[in-house]
Length: 182
Image (cartoon, rainbow, N blue to C red; front, side, top):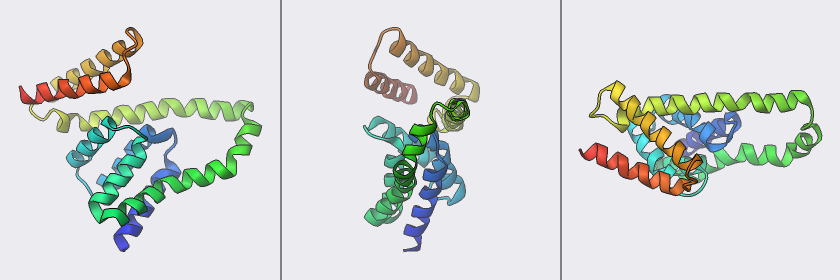
């Protein structure tokens, strides 16, 4: 039962500190699961993240449930899910009216705009942390070029050709499989 409490508390911290939704919380989840409690290593976390990104739904809750299930079965999944969802639920119910009231305040608007670049930097850092485990057969500089090619290709496909994200994800999975096989 102590592990269930650890799962709840670890993911509660992610839920309370993770601003910007699931993608913004991924580096916090990694810090808790890999660096903090040592529930997973970086490679295992990367594999869970890859599978989680391929499935529909919010990534933070999928990661919490998967890690909780892996460690402590259904009780662990429930504890981790409650931990990650409870802070947002309480804040949404309790503070929604405040946000609506003060959303035109320049300080509040500036705070929200200022967080977006931080979330982007956290996501880039997360990608760079996973490069060695994503393409272990390649040297570091080639890994970075491969990641850049996937990013630019996906961005061009989405923006210029209006390709739906699901097709870009599937194409990236196929490209990664080909690279790892070859």
